Image (tube, rainbow, N blue to C red; front, side):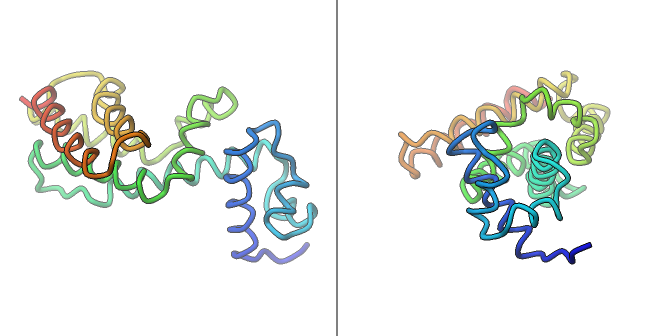
Length: 187
């Protein structure tokens, strides 16, 4: 068995994201991935058993990365207002700083082939526990976590991915939506 190389694997992941965003899942072949990554098709198979598993693993890795970035900013001593702001700003910043990765994860977040892996995500479990704790402590309203996540993150995403809005205007909108989220969700 051939030895794995971190740089080759990174190049493969970058190629998968680039090609998927340009050509979609079906237009992205192992041979195209290998060419863009600067490796042989056989090398791709050293890291990933097949194309479907490769997409699943890369999707899960980067979706967990998003949660890790969000949750790394959370502290136990935060009040509800600060928590909502930190989650919103962290999500916005992640999207701005990692646009291609975010678009890749977002594209596959509703993919049926990947949906069966939702329960495996540690990040969403931790976030849901955090929200449950906030509800139990009467800090945020007792709303289903699915709706809480939608109310917190969907408007942030809408602002962050809109390329027709100037950055300074996005920041004003972000500030405003944080206030709206806080008003809507906090007790």
